[in-house]
Structures are given as C-alpha cells and as structure tokens.
Length: 451
Image (cartoon, rainbow, N blue to C red; front, side, top):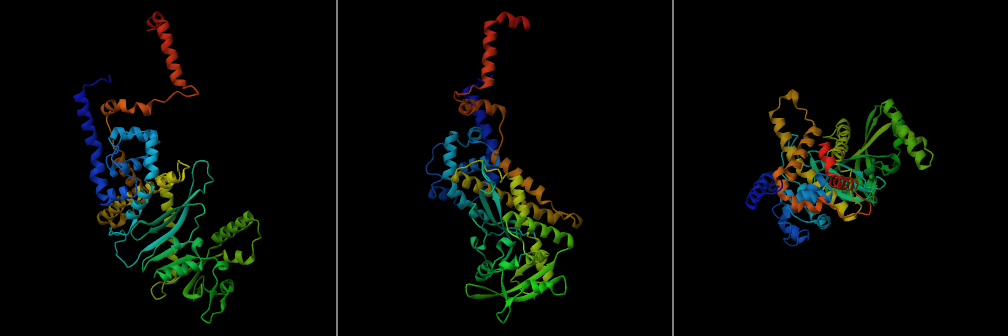
C-alpha cells in the first residue's frame, strides 16, 4: 500500500533526510574551501535559491552524477530521494554546464599546495613532480578526443597541477608553474631544450628522457657534441657527460646520463622504432637504431648530490604517474566520458578530478596511519586497494542511502522520472501488460477457474 497519513509521511521524510545528510555534511563539507558559496555566485554556477538550496547541494549533485555514474534522469530521482533538489533532468544538464568555471576554480583550490602529512616521512625542499598526459575519449570519438595533462606530486602522493585540453593540446612544461627546488621528471614527449630553459628560469630542475636527434648539445668550447659517437666508444654501461644546451640564445648547463639497455629490452626498443617508422611511412636510420639501445636522460641536478645511478633510479619512478592514470581510468571511470557537448565534457572531467582530489586526502591520512602503526615487515601498502576504498567511501558520503518507506513517500515526485511520454515506437512491456489486463477483464470466469 502506498497510502500513508500526511503526518507519518512527513515524519518518515525527516528521518530519511537526517540519515543521508550526516556523512556529507560532517565528513565532506568541512574539507571544502570556506568561500565555496561566494565563488559559486561570482562564477554564476549558483545565481539564486530555487529548487537547489545551497551551492554545497549543487556540488553534491554534480559529484553524484560523475561518481555513479548516473544518467541525468537517475540523477533527478536520486536528488529527490536524498533531499538535494526536485528539478527535471534538463535542468540538471543546464546546471552541470553552468558549473564548469566554478568546478575549475574548486579543482585548483583542492590541488593547491597545502600542508599535508608527507607519506615519505621526510619534509624536504621542493617536490618530486612526475609529468605526463593521457588521452580521454567520448562516445563516437577517435579515442584521442581529450587530453588530461598532469603534474603528479610524488612527494606528497597527490595531484600537483592538472589541465584538460582537446586533442590539439600538446605536451610541454609551459602548461605548469614550478617552485624553486622542484624536480620535474618526464619522458621523451617533454625532452626538449625548451623544457630545460623553462625549468631553470623558475629555479627548478629536470630529469628528462631525450632523443639525440632532437636535443643538440655543446661542449664547454661551444662545439657540437656527437652523442652517438660518444655511445659507440668503449666504456662503462652507465655514463655521465657534462656540457651545455642552447635555447633562444641562452646556454644552460646540463648532464647527459646514458645507461645501456639489456639485450632483450634493446631488441624490444628497436622493434618499436621500426613499427613507428613503418607506420609513419619513412625509413629508419642506423643512428636511430643505435640510440634505441640506450636510455638517455638529461638532468640539471648537481653531480655533487645526485649520482648517475640516483638520477636513473629517479627517472624510472616516472612510471608511477602512468599508474595514477590507470587508477583514474579503472577506479574513477575517467575514460568513460558520456557526453559530446564541449562544456559538459569539461565540467564532467573537472568534477571527476575534484572527486579524485577529495579521495586523496583520505588515502594520504590512511597511508600515514598505516605507516605509523604497521610493523616494518608489512610496510608495503597497496595503492590500488587504498584508492578503491577511498573512492568507495567518497561515493557513500556523496550518494547516501534511503529506505523503502522513503521511496514510497517520494513516489509522486519521482513519477516524471519513472514514467515516459508516449513514443513513436511502442514500449513492449507496457503493451503486453495492458493486453493481459484486457484479457483478464474480458474473461473473468476463465481467470478464476485457472486460479
């Protein structure tokens, strides 16, 4: 029975709302910027109180949409059940698009440098920043419709700086702002002289993998340095050369560190180079094949404090940013963008990154507690399970829960989400049910006899 007295319905509704609001209000809202509401008004994400009471409720709805993932119709039903809003699915789409600038502001606030427990246990000058980009796709796209550019603060174990562009957004360090003492670690996509110049001007250091053909070097006397000739000379499998690179008339002191790959890895690298050349329709050269057998890294770190083995060890840690992308795509469903509208895509990605930043606060605290309370022989923490639990916790805080009694009370307001308008193509389930009901009315005696 769906019929209840007015007083009992109100009582059930109040009890249901008190249950679903506690986790959001007590555990998530205090971690948000204090001027969240003011910025929502300034950036026109929340212009007046109507069906959504506060900017915090709007943010909760947006996070529920991306964390579900929910359709806008299911989002409308969810919002009614948890008491966030009673608006149509079209209104939710408009709210999402209007929130995009506000979400960008919030994301920048959450990923800004703050005093957080250091998982490494040591507070040091500067940060270790792992830089890379990853492709995001949209329905009916090519797989490279959007690009997420990320500088991951490995020292703190959290997002450092993020940016979302379309497919034309190339990889370069000019997208970021660096602090004095930062160490930037990146692959060959960033291995150019321009990257060195940008970092040095901001008093940061780099560890970049390079290709000999795209990174010309000079000796102290200003003469070109032949990298491949140097590699062909007999010597140790790990080498360190000091010289210069030039960019826009300025010279920058650098170190070239080379490590010879093992035979199996070198064969795989040459095979990749051949496939790449074949795909591009060009003939691979002997110098390219020779350079494929080496790991070549440029760094501005001082040789007095960073040995070649230390620099190489740090570069190999760059793989951690690849794992961050993998976790985002698998645990956060970042690779399943459900819209083609430019503003909707931007708002969706920004909301997902806000969710990731919020969950990182939880995982950082948990990692610190585990490190302090776990015996030394059990100090290896699974970042995948930790992130999974952190995101599941955030989903519960955002989405809440409700009872069947609450569902019955809200049923009249849920009707517009549960019932569709007439379609050109008939709805089979509705048609069959109507047909069976008509047969039952036409042959009541037969139905009683069967029963």
